[in-house]
Length: 394
Ligand code: PMP
Figure 1 (cartoon, rainbow, N blue to C red):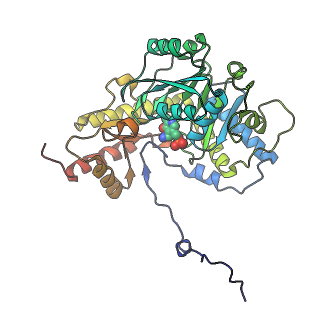
Figure 2: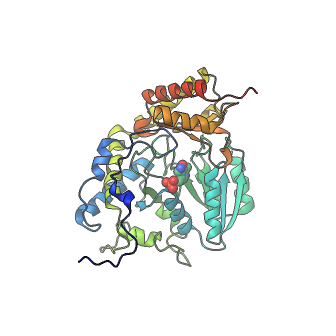
Figure 3: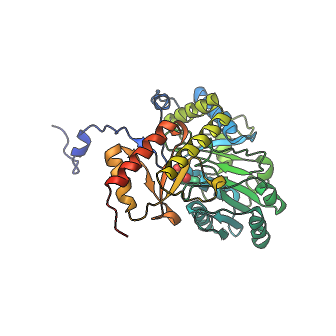
């Protein structure tokens, strides 16, 4: 007789097989994962310290160095999403009581400030309206005033659709003896970015946007030279064991030590996929990818304006090619539009986030999704939604 000690029965819901629907993932992320990357993720599992795995990690490192345009040896993928890399950067660069300055022109600067506060940093922010960005003079003045050890800036503000200029900001930070941390989760691969040339000291991204890999791994790189005294010679240990760069650097073979010590079990399949996505980017070429995202975005923006829709970011040069923000069409309920498009076109676009909630619709065309065919699909879906969704008289 079978043992009858379990009092929670096997759930009925698990008897059904789950089949994921095919959808056009044209929101701000995750983007569609092409079959080649999905197939890589379905390869057999090997050990996280097997020689083939160490080789894959080394390939990933090279791929990230290419995507970031850096020669930094301390270049790895964090096991976790963009938020994990964000915390990895902040937790390793800042000690309790130290000053952090975040540039807030959307939700990511707010989140970075909250993370720094949680580890006991003294946090100040410069804030501008959603859709705007900062001049180098404004950043210089704020650094003079607050004297932080770390400055946080979002390159591609996915909540507002703004791409922030980067030239000169690294030098300004260094003049103030401050590290320059940049978030390129939504921009990497879709917008020109040169980590070393632009003097960025810490840079992180995500796997699920332009790279078209599944969510769950996050590229990050530290400039050893600039981070020598902050990240790698701290007075206190970082609050997180999991995100301690001293451990991670060893695990990724970046510390020059002969032996690799087990730190955590790498998400093996996720690394296969990430490697494949970086291989595709390398095959296509960064410049080609940047150019395609720019051309497709311009084609999209023209189409939107022809339809009578307005772009949220007024300054053409500040429009993020990967994530477009459209002024929420007046008289409509934006939620009805996004639901209508999902239901009738099997296509995801989203509403605003943080400071842009209620003000915009957001459309992400990233990596393989950045094509004129995708644009035509989105324009058709929007046209259809504006015809059939309820419009108030005002
Ligand atoms: N930064 C930016 C600019 C992003 O767009 C996102 C994801 N929307 C994140 C950080 C956080 O990434 P994740 O959702 O993978 O944690």
